[in-house]
Image 1 (cartoon, one colour):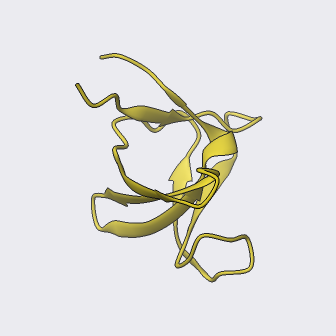
Image 2 (tube, one colour):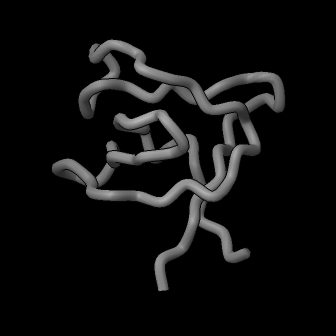
Length: 72
């Protein structure tokens, strides 16, 4: 069973940047508000720190330090 993820940034008012590539220098293509859930991973790069997602109309890479897995 695939486990969905939720954005767990440090502040409830902050956002997680979704980037065009698997690094912090890639352009931001979208943002997910803290607490956003139901995010499924498509694939992860290298060490697994960056993973590709599709969430609504947002497609890009997120840093896994700012999400956690949870069961619905």
